[in-house]
Length: 274
Length: 274
Figure 1 (spheres, chains in turn green, blue):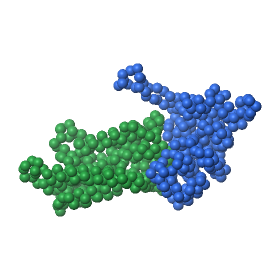
Figure 2 (cartoon, chains in turn blue, yellow; figure 1 turned 45 degrees about the vertical axis):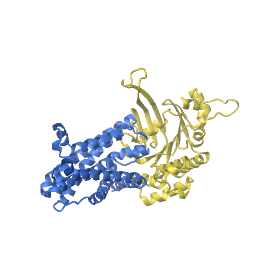
Figure 3 (cartoon, helix red, strand yellow; figure 1 turned 30 degrees about the vertical axis):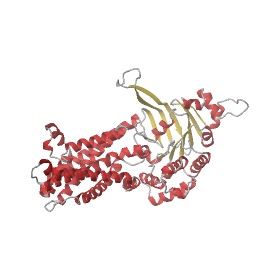
């Protein structure tokens, strides 16, 4: 019982710390929110302009919703990915990495706190973007299966937590270049996961890689729910697959993190700066 | 006989440094160079002892502290903290220790209270108890109440270091590791910190390991002192015992500075410049 209470306090330390970081770096937060919002609008306007670009009659409403779903889901998943992958990077920037790593708190607790924060923060941030972007376009989601979409999104979050842990290893291994490597990993996921286009238009070899990205299944399933009203029952296999894959990726992430942490301790890489 | 607070047995730590060979082409592989940080170090620290480790920069003091803090893994030898092996029983060790390092590592935009709250949660402390303790310790260290909520980045180096000391004592560690805690402090702040160290030892059942290159501080605070140079312990005794190693010169009682010069053949400042 004592251990559980102690670990819960430890997990809350990371939640509270991240809330404080948002409060103290509110300027960054605002800039980042505006960037995401403008990016979502810019991408969605491509759908609105396709009829003019191609000179042919198109279902513009469908295109707008198609792109909006992609951009919002990516916004949410990338927040989860970055929040977790930056759990080490923040410590390096602030110079607190040694203090946090010598504290009697398990890496699992560290992760649980970071993940809970990331999911709540990701949902709130995406909702803000959705409300603002929706005011620019006439969206018709009357036939959408919203509960199914939420279920799918939560299931997809599990995998992104695992990918975030794997990416968090990079700043641990490479104090100077780790964060840039994390950005590159996110960019590759964006390319291959069918965020703005169907993965079927990618070259064959990229489609093979796309099949390994959990975001591919989340985004495809979300579009089926929101654009075609696919039933929750039909999504069950995808949801179970995503949860199973997520658990496997998290286990792999934790194991990798543990090994890399040991390596960092042997090689003296838990330095302050980077 | 009771278990020593700290036991190091033939501990070695070597780092590998990669350096570009200037005589070779720019993209040629970097040459690896081994740096011996600790070389066959053995020592034992008794409970409730203030044990000093005296040596110039680069002598291995901080490596020793990092090994005890579980931030590094020794290449050879064993380290036990109150009978717990730092590598095999990492969590048991982490619960017993805390550390104050030479550069106060904090979330710079957070206030002292926010930083200390983060630390208290990481160590699983109940917040009601922690809040009262934070206040008491900071006031005892001479910090004014109006500074408790101001961002750390607006505080002087001395004030930041006092908050670091408060953080180290907050969790009531059984073994406190002080890594040059007064370096760069003004004489008044230095006295505050040194007085607090003595008070903690007198009032609590704490063992303190203090690394410093301040000879006077070591002489004033420590029960025993190890002089370390180039990763090796070259002398270990009480301040009085160390001074007895050196004969009277110029009619004055020898100081620890004289001892250091006698044993290493160099002045501390020369060693620092190397």
